[in-house]
Image (cartoon, rainbow, N blue to C red):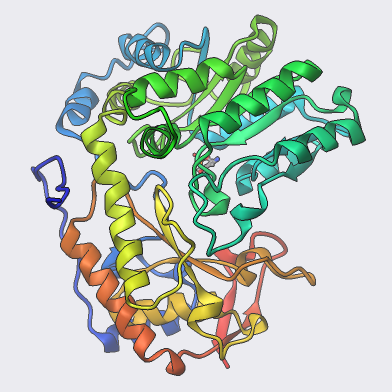
Length: 451
Ligand SMILES: *Cc1c(COP(=O)(O)O)cnc(C)c1O
């Protein structure tokens, strides 16, 4: 098989600054060993997140210039509405500035004390918005989804039997919606199968419950379905995505992922009554119905992004470029969450540094080591992010999130080489202790010291 190449050429370049190991040593010390505290200019390859960090196409940049900045009824809004309607078929399309704004509006309407919201896995902002409304957020992932070595093709699937049990236990009247996150970001970027989505829909129909999607990575998920699910090979990604949207009563979307833009979001609704109330909240806190907290140029770029993201040459390259990093790391003996996800590779930090106990943050030791070694910024997803107050997450992970259309294969080769070198000298990685931390979301601002 030939190399799957980037299906684009480069028109604008953005220099990245080379640093020496000595400089990085000083930078990481000054930042008190927290990668969120360093300047992005001091990072060589930034794999902190895939959210809003992608590169726009020439047509998207042309759209930025075409953007209509009228307060109401802007042409750019109608372009976005048409693109999203073609993709999803939803009757009510609300623009928001990002995914969590859609979540805040929705859960203000359907959440509240004594309510329960099931999901395969809540993303952290989704959980926070559910809980902020007073409702409980429950994760019902299949057991394979929590096993880093399981090669199940759809590790993002919801445990449908557990969903049935939850409905019986708490009563359907307390469940305002059943959520499914595609792909499952908190669970390694793993996809959900069409079969599983249909099964969730059947359970929802049986109990008269609405089904909602957290559809940030709907295109990557649809591509995995096309590639992995029996009988789906001949269908287009657009067709599969449309079937998924047709099943749902609503969706929250951060366009910073599969919208291929740097800022933007959507709330999609089927119910006229719910949409009317959501429109009122949108105007109250985001903006008028035809811009929702965004500039006209942002709407125009989003309209084009939602066209480009279902291009199958793009998706083949996208999924392959992440898989390539995962395969090479596995070949070098580095344990990752298998198989690689759609947007990121997750390194098993506990296996990488067995000499560092969880209370000395093996994931943080690894991200610090990777920055020192090669100027790469990755994200700890383990005891720093989810620990504290006696809590222990099930896994100690380091996420290498791959921005869309930004880095080339040689950048990724460099990343693989750096991780492999670090693996050879992993005995030198040192654990850390927290010097100071805020009350909540401590990973963003905590300060550390090496043990
Ligand atoms: C990013 C993300 C969100 C939140 O979107 P923002 O644009 O960051 O507010 C919600 N759910 C999932 C699965 C995400 O990946």
